[in-house]
Image 1 (cartoon, helix red, strand yellow):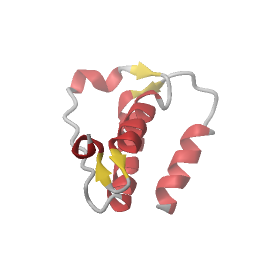
Image 2 (cartoon, helix red, strand yellow):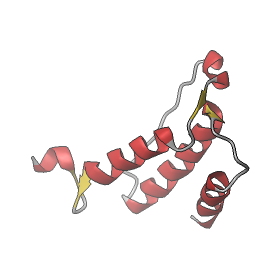
Image 3 (tube, one colour):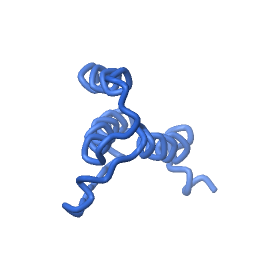
Image 4 (cartoon, helix red, strand yellow):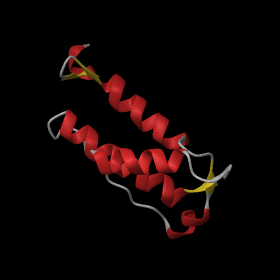
Length: 86
């Protein structure tokens, strides 16, 4: 968890880049998925199948990370999957 957090903060406070390569964004998301898997007892899995051409796509930092984090955060309620409690 400490390694993920150090990578996360390093990513946030890096030099003044406005856009980041997609593989760098995915590396951060993979770290987040590992942490979420520990927090939710192995109930979070992430599989990434990236077309090699997408390796050169640039995007705003943390754009995808925020979607993934919100999906995990709001997908669980009191230790249960949200879809099961509806």
